[in-house]
Image (cartoon, rainbow, N blue to C red):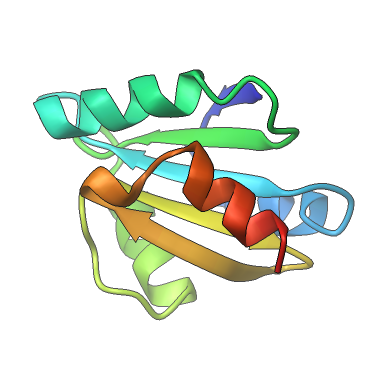
Length: 109
């Protein structure tokens, strides 16, 4: 899995466009939260999954997190993972629900 920094709201349009070619993930990460750090570690262990994983630092870019909640009609949670394909969210998880099995299940939809 390829990890990229999400630090601009403009990138959200890019992510949606890329999702028509390959699965895109958005991981909302709180750098001060141990649960979020553990979820990120689990994501980094998903070496067999072909997807781009965009990591948003919630503390530095809260406005982008708010844009994600508005765009995808979701309630903010931290940590939170969105699986995006063909321009839409096909799955989302938070806290301990963020793992390789969740992503694979979304891929199979």
